[in-house]
Length: 469
Image (cartoon, rainbow, N blue to C red; front, side):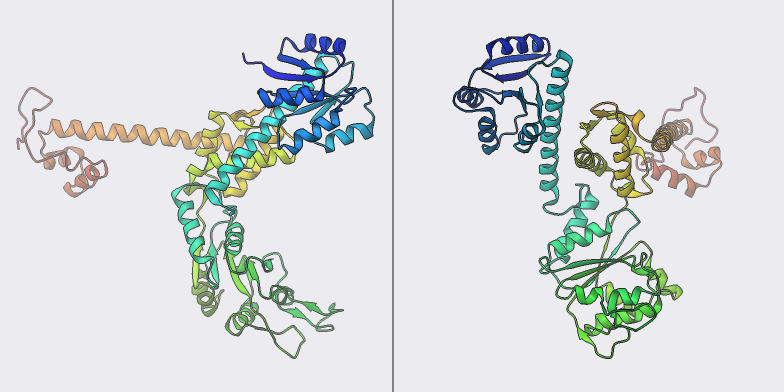
């Protein structure tokens, strides 16, 4: 088994001998007695961890070595050795980039645990950097993860729509990432350096939504104790994202339509209009065309918003993205809670891919967070996933296996029947109790129609058939 290589920089020879004896079972150790020599070794050799004494006597002290090491951009984990474990010394070491510290009389268990923790945290940080680079490669500066055909098509549409100044209607189920799409459009638009304001139309009471969007004057209604600027005024020269726009009342829709048509807003209780220049992005998990049909959404507003439209696919429709999404979420969330969880085992990944994800990407993120909390080791297993995920994924895997087995049975059945009837499809249909057209439809579904011709073939039985072709 590979042993992590540890470089000890300490001028106390007796202490170094003790350290090496404590570590020799688990680590490959090398020691030098000065900061200069330590930096030289690091420049010449690959080292997994540095044990660095703060008090090195003459020349550079440990802080000098640490400062120079970090200035070079090194990600090498550093554990400081100190006789003074007071708070100021420890805080200074941590601020300068040290992972941890040990005293001059560490126990074997404490020393090994400290070094193991520093190595694990560093490995996790490096894996996170790999994930971030991969994500950056796939999506540039957009937070739209995935390289499935559905996501490639989505990003292509965003790239074409973003530079224009047209309104955009974004549709998709809850949890698919409609707000991320809106942010991606804004980030790649000509207004990217101007305000982006988000309004959740569902989260604002219907009696207050017009005030929220267009503002009000002091005394305009009970409780209006001072003038308030609406979100459209605050977004002037920038972009406003109206999430769940299908929740707007018909009155608010009428006012919004006037803003889109002439670029003017009037505060509630006001007498003058104000010109605003705002790009509107809107999103809904409802079918607004159905709302137009039923009279709950204005047809003229719908066509004003849907100058360009984007549909965000369900996670179930892009399952190829699940491993990348899960890995990216794991890297980000584990860092935030300081957990050294770095991946999923194959069975856990298969379970995630098999599940149908009715809550879409948002549900996947929550499942990853839950798994991080309950993970017993650095790799998440399928047993550490929520029970409903495992049960539903198991049902899905069963159905897939059943469908595959039934497909194989059907192909073998119709092939055998073809041979039994000497290739006579009329006789096959009579034997199976279906119409000739029904038979052709079944054979076509199993890609057998072209292979079966109206010709005689050797029968399975020895005697001739009663209805030869």
